[in-house]
Length: 265
Image (cartoon, rainbow, N blue to C red; front, side, top):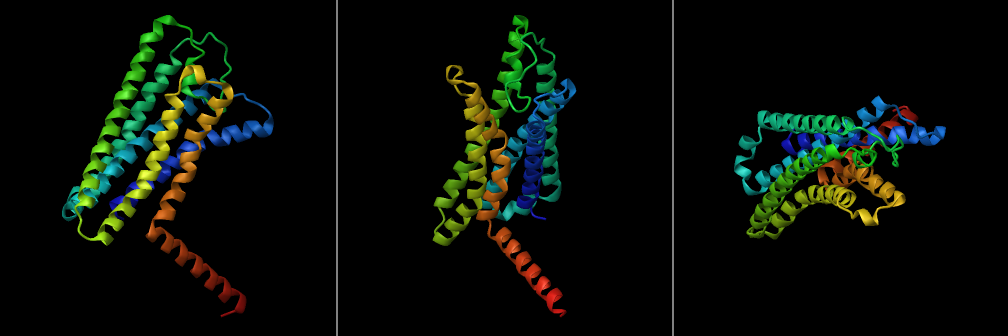
């Protein structure tokens, strides 16, 4: 019921949605030895994947603000991040992801495809779909989408950087070494998750076309679409003392309960 765990809940839901959009279909295709997907299914996959991915980036941006307020303005934490403010920011995150996904999906699937219908990927990925388009009149539309995406991503990135600059300045001014350690420990899970998310996404979309190959594209897409949602819960759980204590208490409780049921006590 605190802002940090409220945003962490949203991050967990987005991670679950992101990995559920691509992996089950890919596993089913592998089991049934097929690579087929319907046109509507491909459009739905693109929509939900972009939706969850963009909303996750936005929630990570909001979480950096949460850490900034907690460390730099602790006395105003309850005021600046009350229940209404948290709900508003969460709604803005999901709404931004929805609008961003609608824009990308509508723009992508309005392009004429004349290079076949085989997407060289284990899921419907926008760059691979755009490779199937050969309409020169839609070149400026592609540039517009890329420019809009860059502006939104860069704006969130600048906000995160400014937040952490202020956080590090505040932490370095602390006189207590224990206080500095505690402040840094609350930021490390978020920084680890954010670094993993940005590094894999940037490597996927900013790599040189000359270095592109089907096997490399497959590996990179797997890295940014599957690895971060899978690793994020581990990063937060391993660095969070409260989560580790809760898991440990649950484990001990289950052991005692099992022992009581076996002994009849």
